[in-house]
Length: 85
Image 1 (cartoon, one colour):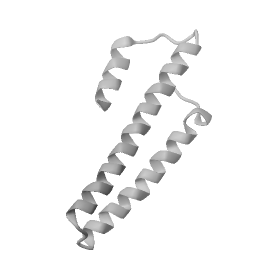
Image 2 (cartoon, one colour):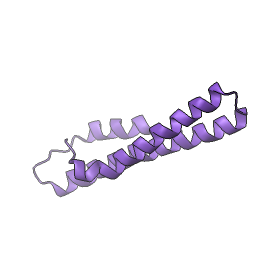
Image 3 (cartoon, one colour):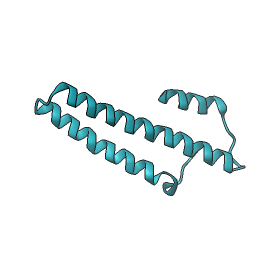
Image 4 (cartoon, one colour):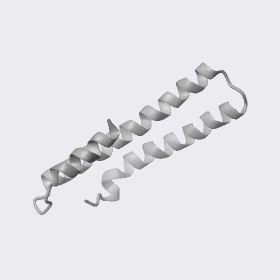
């Protein structure tokens, strides 16, 4: 299933923000930042990426449900969803 850029643009934006945030976490580690602060920021990056993944799944499901020409492979969708869990 191919998603239109207009459908996923907000997700791409979120992932770019998480990418920049991860760069900041790496710099924190290289500069010897406090372990707790690094882990807190890393958890925030992880959550942002997880939310982006769930948004992709939700967008894909919505696309499948509104497009009559799409055959839904339930096993494949379940596998993709579980990869994020």
